[in-house]
Amino acid sequence: MAAVATCGSVAASTGSAVATASKSNVTSFQRRGPRASVTNDSGPRLVSIAGTRPSVRNGQLLVSTGLPALDQLLGGGLAVGTVLLIEEDKYNIYSPLLFKYFLAEGIVNGHTLLVASAKEDPANILQELPAPLLDDKCKKEFDEDVYNHKTPESNIKMKIAWRYQLLPKMEIGPVSSSRFGHYYDASKRMPQELIEASNWHGFFLPEKISSTLKVEPCSLTPGYTKLLQFIQNIIYEEGFDGSNPQKKQRNILRIGIQNLGSPLWGDDICCAENGGNSHSLTKFLYVLRGLLRTSLSACIITMPTHLIQNKAIIARVTTLSDVVVGLESFIGSERETNPLYKDYHGLIHIRQIPRLNNLICDESDVKDLAFKLKRKLFTIEVDFIS
Amino acid sequence: MFVELNNLLNTAPDRAEQGKLTLLCDAKTDGSFLVHHFLSFYLKGVSLTMARERGQLVFLEGLKSAVDVVFQAQKEPHPLQFLREANAGNLKPLFEFVREALKPVDSGEARWTYPVLLVDDLSVLLSLGMGAVAVLDFIHYCRATVCWELKGNMVVLVHDSGDAEDEENDILLNGLSHQSHLILRAEGLATGFCRDVHGQLRILWRRPSQPAVHRDQSFTYQYKIQDKSVSFFAKGMSPAVL
Image (cartoon, rainbow over all chains, first blue to last red):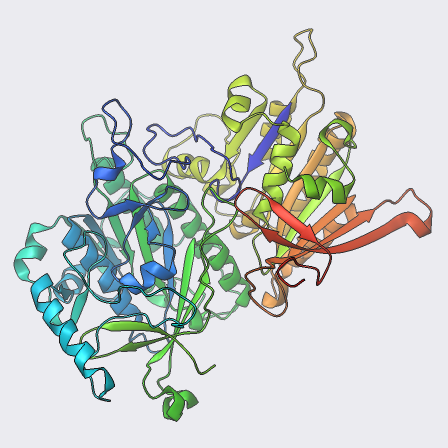
C-alpha cells in the first residue's frame, strides 16, 4: 500500500489530476481542457464569473492583477487560490500602486474586496484607488502617443516593449473593452459611485485589536490571528468556499494585505534577527494559503522584505508564497543619477511563478525588466541596459 | 514517472529496492518534478484518483488539514496538532497517523506489496515552528517503521536554502543526507535561467555496506522539463546546443 503525506502545496507537487477532498469541486486543482464548457449540472460554471478566464497552459482560473503588463509576465494572470507577494521597494512608493491596481481591478469587475492594513484605514485606501480608463478616451490618447513616440517628453501609454525581432508583433495598448485586465489612470481617482456600488470589507488592525473576538490558541501574534479569523469568517459567511448551504457564491474574493510583517502588525521580524515570533509570519502565510486554496479567492500581499533581518525567513516566505514579485526603485541609489536609467524608476523582478498542476510554468525569457511611472500609467519594459 | 530517470537510476517499478530512504533536494529551483516521478513510479500507472478510491493512496493534504486544525477544535488528536500549540512540540501525532495508514491490513489476501512514504516537503515543517531535531526524530521513527519493520521505502523532499543561512534547514538537510541511500539533488544553473536547460541533477548513491571503492557514486546530468516528461542529457550535451 502506498501512502503519501504531503505538507507542502498539493497543486505544485504533481502533474496529474488530483481531486482534493474539498466540500465542493469548485476550487480543487483539476486539469481542465482549454475550452471549459458551461455545464448544466452541478459542475461549476467557472467561465461565467466576471473578470476571470481559464489559463491556456493548465486550465486554472485566472484573474487580472490590474496591470495587464504584469499579467502577461505571470503567464496570463494570477490563478484563483494563490498568493501574489510583492516585495516592497525601499521607500514604499511603488508597491502601494500595485496594491491599488489589484483592488481597483476588483471593483471594476464587481469582485468582493477584503482590504487589511495596520497603517491606513481601508476606507481611505479605497478612496485613493486609480480611475479606470474608459475605452474611447484611452483609444484617443493611445493614438496621440504613437504619434508622439519620438518626442522625449511623451505622454506614454502602458506598454511592454519586447525585443522586437524575436517576438511577434503584439497589441500594445488598451483596445476595446476587454473584460480581462483594465488600464488605470494613476492621476485620477476611482469614481465614488463605483466604490459605493462595490462590496468590500475592511480590516484595520487598531480597531480590531481591541475588540473581543474569540482568540483560538495558536502561536501567531494576535494581529495575525485576528486577521486569519476575519478572512475565514468572510469566506464562510459569504460562501466563497462553497460550504455554506444558504449562499451560492459565484464571485471572486480579492484579498489585499498591506505591509505584512511590519512592526505595525505586532511582528518583530523587521526589528530583531532572532525574535520570539520568528514563525508567526510563516505560519500565517501557510494557513492563509490553505484558506485560499479552498475558496474562490486571490490575495495580494505587500511585504517590506528589505527590512527583514533574517535572510532565512525571506527564503521561507518566498517558498510559502505562489507568485513573488520584487520591486527595486532607483530612488536614493546610485542608479538614480546614472544616465542609462534616466527613463526608468526602478527594476521589477519576477522572482517566482508557481507550477500549478503542471511540471513547468510560463517563465518569461526576459529577466531584466524595468518599470516607470509616467503621468498616468505604470509601464514595464525590457531593460536593455543590464 | 520519467523513463529516462529510471534508466539513470537503473531501476524499474517491478525491481525496485526495498527498505531504502531517498532524499530529494532542490536548490535555486523547483524539485517538485522529482516528487511527481516517484509518486507515479510507485503507483505504477494507476491514476491518483483511482488509487485513492481503492485505498492504495492515503493522502494527507497539509494545507487543507491546517485550516481544519486551526479554525475548528478537534476532538481526537489531529496529525497537525502542533499548529495549535504555542511552543514547538513534536511530530508524534503525525507519526501515529503515518503508522496507522501504513499498517498492513489483515484481510487474508495480499493487496499491495510494500508501503511507501512520500513527504513533500519537510522544510515546510520548519517554517511552521518545528525544530530540526523534532523533524529528524519524526523521520527516524518513520524509517524504523516503514523501512525496517515493513520493508518499505521512503522518499522525502527538503529544500536547500543555499546562502540564505537557514541553520535549521541545514541541520535537517545534513542529517538526512547521512541517513539516505540515494540523494537526488536538483540545482538551478549557476549561470542563471536558460530556456533549454532547466537545471542540473546530481545523483548520489550511498551504500554503507559496500567496499569503499563502490561506496559513494555520483553522477551529474542536466535536464529540461517538458509538458509531460523530463529529458536528461550529459552536461553540455543539450540538444539545443548540439
